[in-house]
Image (cartoon, rainbow, N blue to C red; front, side, top):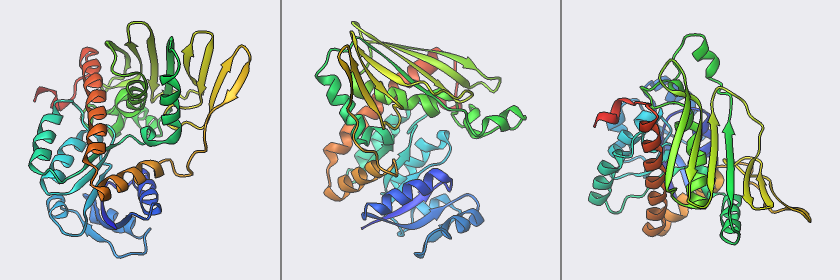
Length: 328
């Protein structure tokens, strides 16, 4: 059984803990929050005895857990992952793993010094069965283009409009549409079609300096992929992958429940069942990989993360979106 510590006490952390414990491979044993009362309140959701911390160094150096799940603000992910690796902990860090791809250099050095440690980016959709079904379908068909969409009106946007500064709408915490939602689309595009030959981003900027919405364009030479992301608008558009006169229609690339393949002869449903908890497949993968000592599987996923963040960093910098850590 893997003992799990967590950084971050929001709803996504609870969803991951439920998924992790549901696999039978993890048990929650430690909680960190900057405010001890928040850690205490969060721990009341669980029957088992849980160690509580409001000091990050003491938390990471403790013997209460083997694996840490990080769900703090975006800009803290890379530094906290680095500190956890240096403390000898396995790490599962929410996307985006880094705010700038340059952060991977320090992480790579730390992982080389701690070769037994596993590090994963929790881009949950790439572990789902239907994501793999799309990938396998594409491998057997000639792609002629794609349009991927993920636009969700943020629950924090009203607070931003009221003059407050939610983390997801500030450059200080590496917020914005591409970092928060567009990353799902970039993962899908690179996971399905490979690294593009050329990538651009046209954002609609907010006064805080982050992108509220934006359009990404990936060129693959003989076909193009357009991706629309946004946190200030709610969209119900499907995503589509084109094969000439045939089309594969997806309800949501970040969590696929429908895959309709339409040809001149009709429509065929290709999706398999979706887990009740969308984080269950990734939690099972992380547990299996760590317990099985499968460093090759971990390395493959990290390479995909590097590719995703190299493309995102290039697009963001070219679009003029600047984060505090970019000068490093």
